Length: 148
Length: 94
Image (cartoon, rainbow over all chains, first blue to last red; front, side):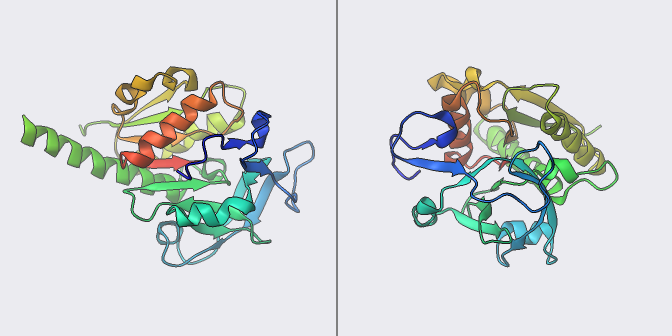
């Protein structure tokens, strides 16, 4: 995406000079004992006009995390220039979710919506994703029928 | 009955990882809420190393990149995400 041939995650210890994913610099205040740096909840700032905002509503939700690594901020501008948009940030401004505005449905999060999803109240991101997949299937089968 | 929605989860399933168990549970719960049958399959990262991985990936109506790095095959994971990104396939990475 950024045309960096040896782009890598620091977790892989490849010796690459371009780690676009690096260890998180600060732990969440609610870090669980023995858990990774980002564990527990954090309230997010979701930006209006993003797809994530239209899905998760206007109230800034608290989301569950379980991870140690995040976007290397040195590359953030390059990612944005390549078309990736930051849709949510954490309390200290770190990237917590990104999306591709011109894509049918492409959202990546540092938090895990599956951890706060409940049988009676599935997380809205999963509902929106399945709806997008259902719409996509319809367009796929139409295209198939047209070419048959 | 409605036709099942087919979702592929790119990742190496570990029953002991709470995040993996929760991924399956959240998707089935969401499908139940939408009243649509769900066909859910984990796609091991090593199976996507092949340049012909598109054949596996295109069978699904939506793709998910699972949590739980380091992956068995980082190349396979990236190939899966690249497929979704460049072919305009519905995608969520968590």
